[in-house]
Image (cartoon, one colour):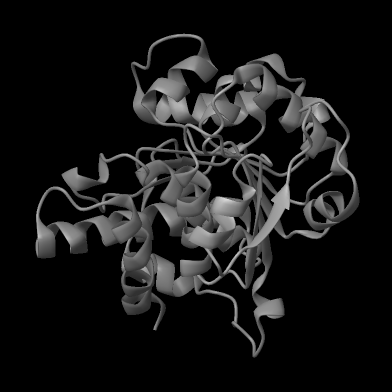
Length: 279
């Protein structure tokens, strides 16, 4: 297998295709986004909206009780689940059932405490979600978690700083470093346009715009990965689809608005970016 990444093009994505959406939201997959805090309630909203914008059928947001009412009002399309008061409590009731039955779970956006994040990650992993996507603070604590305690299908969405934390050193060979993270954590990894599968396959997404370097952009990307995975796309391809659509959405907004578009505008642009290549 070549060590050089495959360049992602519209032709490649059309060849892969997307699952038939069916005639019901139930046929397009269920997503649960676990995260949020008083200081960063918007991250789960951006991720949840992005999952819906790439076609996921249903989204539930699992957030601390201190913000569940406000989050529910801000994204009325999503179900709302309250996390336990103590992060190390086992998950029970509707929260446990929805995580167990979800087609993909995203954990990390908006969390602000590493100990609580680690405890919540272990509690969610104990339920055994089918696909687990990790972002933000969840990546910062991943090195302290036994890989065997996590689901078999794991997707990581680090920025460059988080990639350095996962490696325990600075990055010096971007594509090689992303492949190393994928091997080390037995996970699909998406980082700044490079997607690596632990089996050695690697892709390069060249779409994008300088405006993508804005607060909340990574939450949108993580939500898009999770939404595509929930639709039944295998994890590496889900990450490639998300990276390309996220980049194309940024390019479209950059051309129309210039530098300074917002992450919530980016989420709304995802269907437009996806439409041209998926039609």
